[in-house]
Image (cartoon, rainbow, N blue to C red):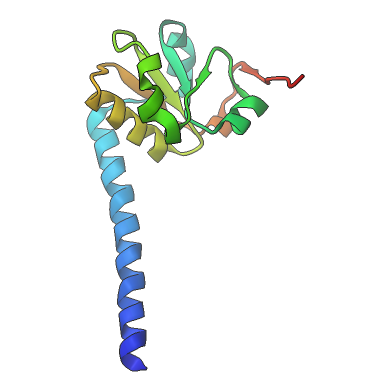
Length: 134
């Protein structure tokens, strides 16, 4: 019985360390890429960029940044062709790690200018739009 408990304890600690390590690695890569921008800079320069909301469609429909298109992170590898690699891409989500992961994928796919909102979308104070259902 003690052996089983010890094995479970080791597994739980291993999973926990993996999660923390993954989070730290993603943050390190984001810092290395230097793509985090403030809300003010995002809003002042977004007219020249492709704005991508990485949240799922139901969240996008309830409220999103004016001018954004919805390309959920879970579908990004299938829809990245909808973006132009020669134009800046601005990403946002509720979680910064999702933005960093998406930026890493886009950089790997040949995009050169990828930035993400430093704050969470729920902290956004700029113009938003709600999609109405008919």
